[in-house]
Image (tube, rainbow over the protein chains, first blue to last red):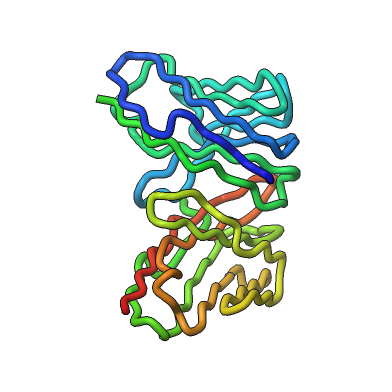
Length: 112
Length: 107
């Protein structure tokens, strides 16, 4: 069964600390995405990837890095976390850009 | 500016009533997608609708490209329909998201 798994599901971090959010998909999809969701903003694209080794900047990449070491895994890295990065983060995978992506369950991140 | 406007922001209905959700977009698009998000949960694709009308059970999506709008109609709403509905338009190989409509169905 197609699946996108995120870890951790909840994370509390301190300002200035490093945070890594992980995403694994078993769908053999080329495209993977990281979004954040905040009240009043819908979903905003942070980084995306076309395949292993590729990462592309989305609409709000500042303060975030991404890594796609394999087809299955896509990580989002906050090198120096700030309180403004408190949000819910969703990972998604998709076969093509015009196909509905499959979403993970989300990671709730609080930066204190 | 905001390219996708969703309305209403929230909607409270009695069980059995019909719901009408709207998305309007300010730029050209290739297709419109609708997603359902349960409270505190993930997003699930409801419709991928390039244009015209699609129906799935009690849900109907109508997208009119020329008028730059898409609607989601839920007939005979049920309590389990409660949640947030988001539209996303596909433009230049990216999905641009609306802010969502929070739907609450009361018994």
